[in-house]
Image (cartoon, rainbow, N blue to C red; front, side):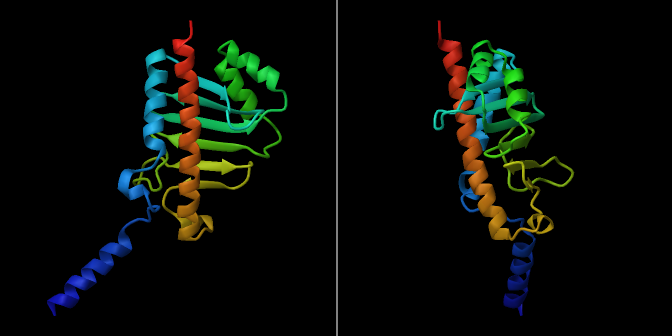
Length: 187
C-alpha cells in the first residue's frame, strides 16, 4: 500500500511542476549571465541604452533600452539606411538609435525582447510577477509565463521557442556588451 501512495504522490508532484525547457534546469537560461553583464556595465556608466551593428549581418542593428532593475527592451532588425544609424551610434545617441530601429514599419527580420526585471529570459515566472516575452517579425508574441496552452502552443513548441529565443537573446546581449566595452576602452 505504501508503494502506491508514494508513487501517487510522485505523480502528483511531477504533474504540478511547471514546464522548463531542456537545458535550462542544469545551468539556467543562457541570457541570464549576459543580461547581468550588460546591465552592470550600463549601471556603471550611467547609461539607459546602447546600440551596435550586428557583426553577423551587414545592415542589421541591435539596440537596447534599459530601466534599472526593472526592464530591458532589446530589438534586433535590419535598418534601411545604415549610415543614419551608424551616425547615431558614433555620436552616442543610443536612445534615438533604439527608437529608429524599433519604430520601423516593416517588421520583417525584427526580433524584439521584453526582459522584465532585466535579468535574462526565464521560461516560467512566479505568480504575480512580470513575465518576459519575445516577438518575431512583428507577429505573435510569446509570453514566457509558463502558460503555453493559453497561447495555442504545445509544451514542446513553447520549450523549443524558449530555447531558440534565449540563445538568440544571449548573443544579442553579448554583442551589445562587447560594443560598450570597446567604447569604454577606446582613446
